[in-house]
Amino acid sequence: MTDDSWIAPALAANPSTPIDLLLAMANCQDEMITDALCRRRQHNQMPADVAEILAGSPHARVRSDLVGRADTPLRLIAALAQDPHRMVRLHIAARREDIWVPLDEYVPEAAYALLARDPDPGVRREILYSSDVPGHVKLILAEDPALRTIVYLRYGDDDQSLAAYHQMLTSADVAERKLALENTRHTPSASLIPLLLADPETRDQAARQCPLTRTQAEELAPNPNPSTRRAVAANPNVPDDIALALAHDQDASVRRAVLYRSNIPIDLLNKIAEPVDSGQRTAHVDWLWDQRDNAELVAAYARSRSVVHRRTAAICPDLPADVLATLATDDDFGVRLMLAEQHPDEVPVELLTELVFTWNGYSSYNLVRNPRLPDESIDQLIRSDNSDHRWLAALSDRLTPEQTSQLAKDPDPKIAARVNPPPTPSLHEFQDLLTQGCCCNWSETARHPDLPVEIMWQLWERIAP
Image (tube, rainbow, N blue to C red):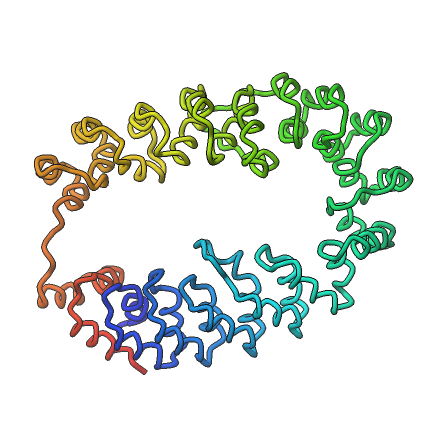
């Protein structure tokens, strides 16, 4: 017997599947079929009526996967916050982190408040750590004795927070002491810092975050443990001469910690900045990105010797014209690329042209579609011996009839098919395609947006419960 498991995912993924067929699939209550609707239906193509039915599915996995869709109506998300199954509620609490599509609102505040009193401690903890839940809602978690101290530390008023801080910092539980040290709202008293540095469990965290005296920094800097030296290197309060010595540490992670330390003085930064290969990926500098609205600060680091700081500056918004011009001619390819990706309407045309011919990453498709790219660049791409260049031209959406005709005869059949798609198969040709080859070919055919509706219904009849 032929395995028909490919049919439901293919019909769910087909953008042309009619609403009445989608409703039939949603109403069937078969877990495999209804879950395929949640997982395979393209973004923003799930009709609200279908989502409504799926929200009432008897299967928790289906309801949970519906929460994971960015186009699920908020009224359904709010209703599912009272779902009897823990997994569904947990996914709502974590929805901001699970959905990559930017939304104005991920979960209604009232639903978050409901989940803050959820009977399951895992759901409540997810509310605590969610970046989307407002602080005043997180304060509801203080009703839970197990979370009260950490909630007050982070979201309570000044008195509540300070009391929680001292309680956690002097706790016998090392995990609580570490959590307190992570909080930047308060600083340990000078009398407590030596105790925290003497404790192996908290030494590194204290060395990273506490204001150290010169003597303390000098004693910790030569520590044989790289993690301790790394912590000292990252501490912005450590004297520059000690940081400079750590910038030449034998351990690369220690050297990197100095480079990324918060508000590192530019004169120190210029002394320690190491060359970075153009193709080497680097993390952006968090503290500089956090202050991206400080134009003067960004401009200063954009002119430093540090590649990672210049790359971070390149992705900052609202760059002054002189900074943008400087970064557009930067020696580092990554700086120029990031600048063009983030500022496509402002970078010089010469930079766009350079990148179209030298970069083949995901953003090359946006670069070639930039209306500022000269027509002659498209023509050069078409005449290139490099098939990647000709692909870019085919994807530019700005070909002249003559250029289209030229690419329609390209030796790469995929490029030729892109600019001159084959005619839509007839009804009988579709039927033949669904009986030849393997299920991978059948699935591709069933997802074809021009698949006749009558064939879709025939496929559905094969699997309908």
